[in-house]
Image 1 (cartoon, rainbow, N blue to C red):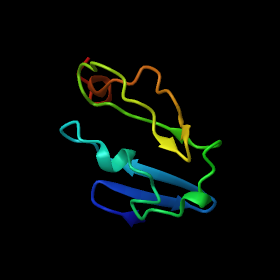
Image 2 (cartoon, rainbow, N blue to C red; image 1 turned 120 degrees about the horizontal axis):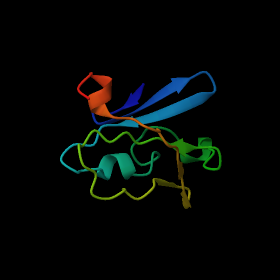
Image 3 (cartoon, rainbow, N blue to C red; image 1 turned 180 degrees about the vertical axis):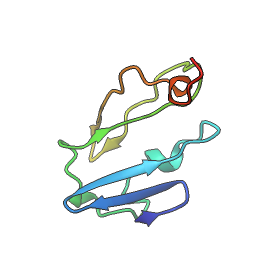
Image 4 (tube, rainbow, N blue to C red; image 1 turned 45 degrees about the horizontal axis):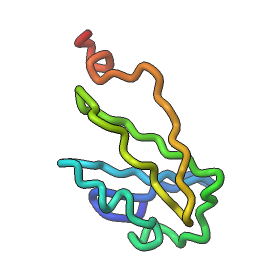
Length: 92
């Protein structure tokens, strides 16, 4: 694991995951170039195969954040269908 308290790189054999915690709507470190954050050399990232998965724990989402951009490419965002924090803790 590499990085900071807010954003770190988790490596799994030949796959990697960049995990970021966004609080108070401050996503600067998460959206920064992974190479600039010291997470990994940018040339090791295959931007064409990279996907972003964002889980929003807000009760009401006002707008969708812009996609992460690596090597000049907007990264495709994966979807979580039917995710609800209330359902996960049995409140619905």
